[in-house]
Length: 202
Image (tube, rainbow, N blue to C red; front, side, top):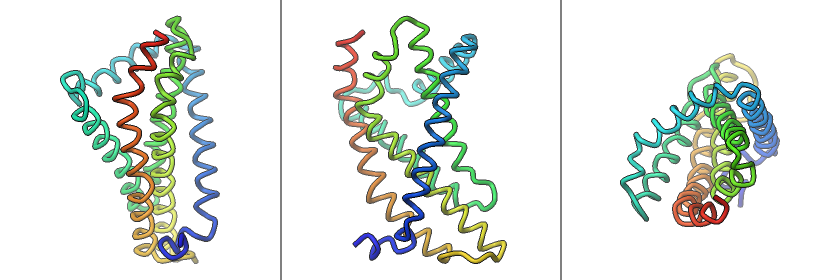
């Protein structure tokens, strides 16, 4: 069935690319943690950036399904952009979304540790929805990088396993079948479960 609906992704290359992307995400998360832990003054810029982003969403005025819908569509747009960036050859722009999110994830972990709240509280606040949101992000970035690789190879007239448009079709299908549901689950968990768990440890 997978080969029928995603023929250009069924040769094992996607699996290997996902492993590589996930490893890169992990390494960058550790770098983000180490950078803020060693240079605490960087935390002020981070907090400012984060709260500006939250303020722009207007989350403090929303509750329940409105908040979940806002989170879902914001994350959906970000993830879709990571895939769409892959349509631009040579630049591999999807790597920027991967790197930014990984560095921020690690950096906020260091901030929690330095503030005395500890990594346990941070993990409680991140993992419940992160087990859905982070795989969605990694998949989206992997699809974008794969698109860019195929598009670049075609322009350079190198031998590739598939045409760009066929690969774009399969990546789009994969996105809506796998990434979209993960983001929906992540938004619901972040709004309804994460605050309850955080209240138990803070």
